[in-house]
Image (tube, rainbow, N blue to C red; front, top):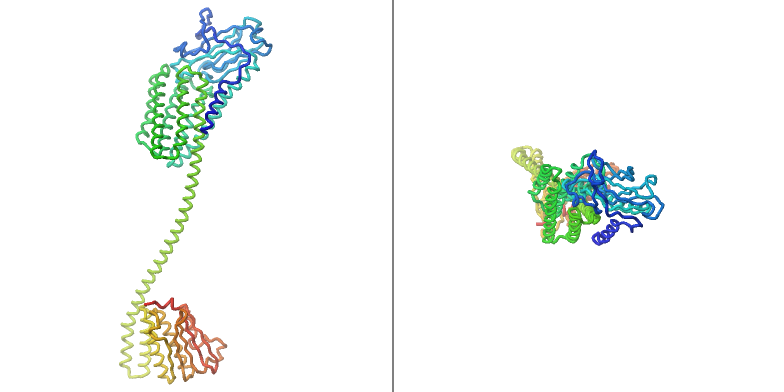
Length: 616
C-alpha cells in the first residue's frame, strides 16, 4: 500500500484536473452585485471582479446572495449550433442561473437550510428558446456565507470561472469531475464507516485490544468528515452544520490520540479524562463565540488539535523505536504520509491553495486508514486464531489435570479405606486375641475331656492364624516354610501316615511373604492334609516346595484311593476342593487337582512371587 500511494496520488491529481478541455468560452471577469432581500438589483452599481471570486478575500464579512453577470453572443461564442451549457466547477453554497432575465436552473436551496454544494461541480443546459443571436445576459446568483461563519476557508462563499460551450463537450468534463469530487468520496466514506463500525465492535467486545475501538471511531469520524463533500441537503441550518463539523474534529482527535497510545501498549490515565473534557470545552467556546465568529475560534482549535495528533504520533514512533517493535516499519511511513496529507489539506482550507489539491489530500488518509484497518483485522484474526489454539490446548491440559486429580482422589480414597480397614482389622484381631484367645487357652489347660481340649487347641491355632492375617504383619518365607513343615509332619505322624517334606534351603528363599498369602496358603495346606488323613486312606504323603520362574509352587501328593467316581468328574465338589481353589484365586494364583481311583491325588498350588513376596 505504501508503494502504491505515489501512483494513487498521481491518479488523484489527474481526476482533480479532469480530461483535457474542449473548445469553450471561459469567463474570467464578471460584473457582481450584492443582493438585498426584497430589493430589485440595480446593475448600475455593479463592479467588475476577477474570477474565481473568493469571498474570504473579496467580501470577507458578507453573508447572503451575490449576483454575477456576463454577456455573450450565441452565434460566435463556440462556433457550433449544438445545445449550449455552462460548467461551474465551484459555486459555494447554492446556485441559480438566469438567462436573459428568465430562471433557467436552480442548484439547491437558496434559503435556510441552504444547500451545501461547495464541492459539487454543476452543469447547466441553456434552453435554446431563451437564447438570442447576440447580446445574451447570463446572470448567476450565489448564496454563500462569510468567512467568519464557516469552519474552513473552502466553505466560504465564492464562484469559480464560468465555462460556456457545447453541452456534450462540457458533460464529459462534468462527469469526470463529479466522479472524483462526489462519487469517490461517497464510496470511500461508506467503506470507512462500515470498516470503522466493525473495528469498533471488535474492540468493544475485546477490551484487551481497545485500540481497535479507537481506530474504528477514528475511521467513522473521518467518514463523517468526508460526507461534507457529497452530502448536500441537511435538515438543519448552516450554523448547526458548521458547529457539528468543528466538534467532529475534536472527537476524531480524541480517537486518533488514544489509538496511537493504546496501539503502543500505553495508557495515560489523565488523558482518559482530559480529552473528553477538551471536547466539551471546545463546544462551549464555539457556542460562546457564536456563529458570527466561528472561523477564528475554530482555527485556533484546529491548530491545537493538529499539534496534539502530531505529538501523539511522535510519542508513538519514539516509544516503538525504543522497544524495537516490528510494527514500526509499517506505521512510520504511513504516519508520515498521513501527516503530509493533513498538512496539505490544512493549507488548502486556510489559504487560497487550489481546492482540488485539498480534495486529493483528503482521500490519501482515507486510503491509509483502510489499509491500516485491513492490517488490524488481519492481526486480530491471527490473535483470535492463536487464542483459540491456546484455549484448545488449555482445555486438553485441564482435562488431563482433571483426570489426574480424579485418579489421585481415587487413590486417596482407596488408601483411606485401606487405612480404615487396616485399623478395623487390627482392632478385631486384638479383640479376638485378648478375649476369645484367652478363653480358648483356659479350656485347653482346664478341660478334663481330651476331645474338648483337642478341639479347643485346634480352634486356638485357627484363631491365631486369623489374627495374623488381620494384623497384616508379613512373615519371612523361610519361617513360613518352617511353620508349614512342622505342622504337616506333626499331623501326618500323629495319623500314622509317612510324611516327606522337600523345600529349598534358607539361602535360596527370597524376602518376606505377605500376611494374607501366608494365611490363605496355610489354610489350603491344612485342608489338603486333612483330606489325606480323613478320606484318602494313604500310607505315604510327600510335600514339595519349589521356587522357579517367578512362582512359588507347593505340590502335595499321596498314594491313597483317589477321589471317587461318584463326583461325576467334578473334583471341586467334595473334600473342600472348591474352597482351596477359591483361596488360590484370591491370591491371583491357581490350585490344580489331579486324581484317579486307585492312583492317589496330586494338589498343585502356584502363587506369583511378585505379588506376595517382598525382597529383604
